[in-house]
Amino acid sequence: MTATGTATIRVRLFARYAELVGRAEAAVSVSLPATVGDVVRRLRDEVPAARALPERPLAAVNLRQVKLDARVEDGDEVALLPPIAGG
Image (cartoon, rainbow, N blue to C red; front, side):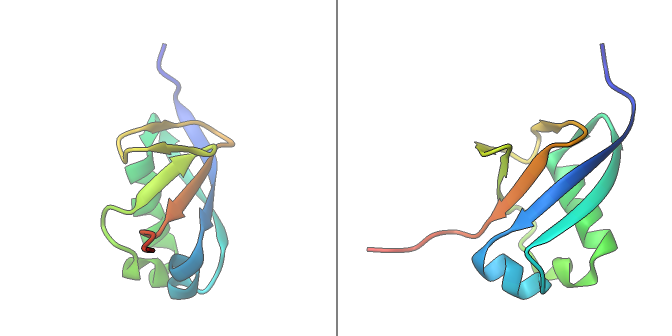
């Protein structure tokens, strides 16, 4: 069974992404069924500064790293994670 309707997704931005966007959190609404990629696109539409984010950021849904085609549901948390460098 496919869910239909609207979902509110909490988006968390970390490190450089939070700096670029000017905030660490946002909430976006998407039509279901929806993917992480849909959430990223909606964030870019609703928050102009989010257009500075890369087209394909690393993402996690509810603390699990996922690809942009992963499904989201109402109440999910999507984290956008900048690449980590270190040595």
